[in-house]
Length: 472
Image (cartoon, rainbow, N blue to C red; front, side, top):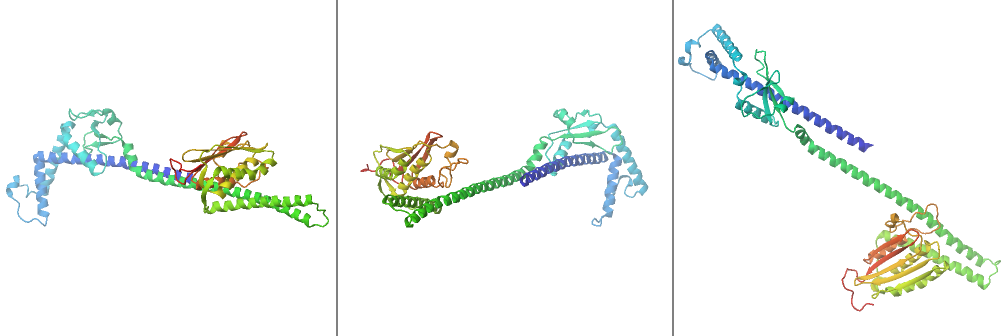
């Protein structure tokens, strides 16, 4: 909600900025047209005064008065520049002179056509200079219209923009001090007004978008981290619950067996002793496996898995693991099949970690099979390494879960069914061991049809294109 509120504020601010710039542009163009009209009228007044005899006399008289009143100018006035003795005239003479000038100007205005009063070159120069001085865009077209919006042709080369000029909001009256009833208006057209306004706010818009995008990205990352931490917390809670249950069962079994052996009232035949000792041995192995899983998890957390590399025969290693795992598989009336076809089956590897890797895969194949487990181990090699494939006839893994099964503490959800024990550490450990050997691991699985794990271990810890001689 705060993020949406911030976006709303930014949008409102940008709209306000655009609206303010629109108002500034309209006001600026209107002011510029007023200045153009005012200067054009001033130029005409000066031109009229200079062309009228009374006007020339008035200008000369005013210039003389300014000279006399100026403290910085000393000297007399040349009598030759005072025709008719205007300099020494009285105030009444000056008033009469001004009246004659005004009458002459009014008479001239009433008689002159608007086209004679406007010079296209002067008008064009005024428009360009005023708009440039005010930092406004240069008009692309201008024209003069009367009260009835009829265009006044100024020259034969004036561009035809009649439709645009009639629809433009920018206009100003010319010669607004005229006493004539008829009025004339200067209209100008400006192209791409929206573009000019928007280009002014583009940098601010980009900066705002960047900051909002940054906030959204940080929010998304934070939300993702929170959800991930929640999932990890749930998994850890599940791990603690499973670990507590798994530890209590063998401890209780060992305790009961020890009490039975120590109880003098319980008959102890050789068969019963062997049964109790077997129970203690099996549960002790189970405790050892639990501790090993926890230790493997600690090793993965610390990132200090140390490999003791030796020249290792993978076929021999597979056979050793099968012999140790046959008891577990036979309890489920299952079997382990092999097809060891690798021509080169010696690698530089850590015997303990690779052995644990195979134990984990076989253990998972047994646990996640509802029927008699059938496990098949196949090997083949090429010039860079050996591939070990472990297949089962288990429940399989859904495609959506296959990319997650190698995550630490992750277990494929089974709803409310908790008949499969484990901590979600095995496959994570398997992937870590393979990657520390510079290998790769992938899974192929179809729900209800079993899974196949393909492990590739290179002959050396660098990628080579040819196997080392003497292997096999």
